[in-house]
Structure formats: C-alpha cells, structure tokens
Image (tube, rainbow, N blue to C red; front, side):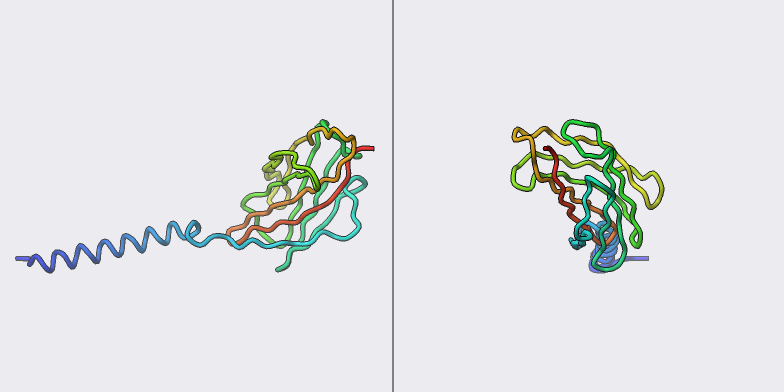
Length: 156
C-alpha cells in the first residue's frame, strides 16, 4: 500500500486537530474561568455574639462561626463554615481590615465533612486597640467562586 505525501500530511493534520481538541477539553477549566459571584450576609448578625448565615445568589446557604467569643487579637481562633446547596472544591476565609491594610490573612479550611469546613487562625494586633474587620468567606466550586463578606469589630 502506497500512501501519497499529501495523504500523509492530511492524516497528520487530522491527528494534530484531534490531539488539540482532547487537550482543550482537559484544560477547559483553565480556559473558561469560574464566574465570580457575591452572596449576602444576613443583616444585623454579630460574629462577636453568634454564628452568622449568608445566602448565595443562585440558591444555597452558608454559616460562619468564629470562636472563642469575643473574638480577640493574637488569640487562636477556630473558624467553621457549613455549606448547603453547592458542592465546594475549596473553602477559604480572608480577614481584612475595613479601613486599614493588615496584610495577607487568608486561611484555607479543611473539609471535616462534605458540608463542613474548619481551620484555625488569628488576627494580627491593631495599634489603635479597636478595629473593624471583614471576614470574607470564599467558596470555590467547579463553575464559580462565591464570596460573602461579614463585618465585625474587635477590641475595646
């Protein structure tokens, strides 16, 4: 069987296109980034007194608890997030000063159960003795990244 040069080139091009299609399918999560979606925290909830809940824009809920209470600077804190209505691949909590940059304070939580994520962290000390913080829960699924901010005050 004698294959002509043009047939060999055509077959090589087809094999290359099939290979690129398979590679594109494998890399599609990188090529098609997740949509960033914001949720909302329940109004009036105070993390210094209790766990707080938030709702996702497309359905589902989450609950954030930080203990011990009251939340204090430079103390070990246990962070717990419970999630319903979505299947997280990763859950993180980012702590930032509301009016002052306090550096990078993000902690990835560990799955304790399929719907519950836990971790430990601490807040850096503030020179003024009182500070407003925002704990943003970031839930990453296969299709989206959901963030819900919770505001709380620390100090006297």
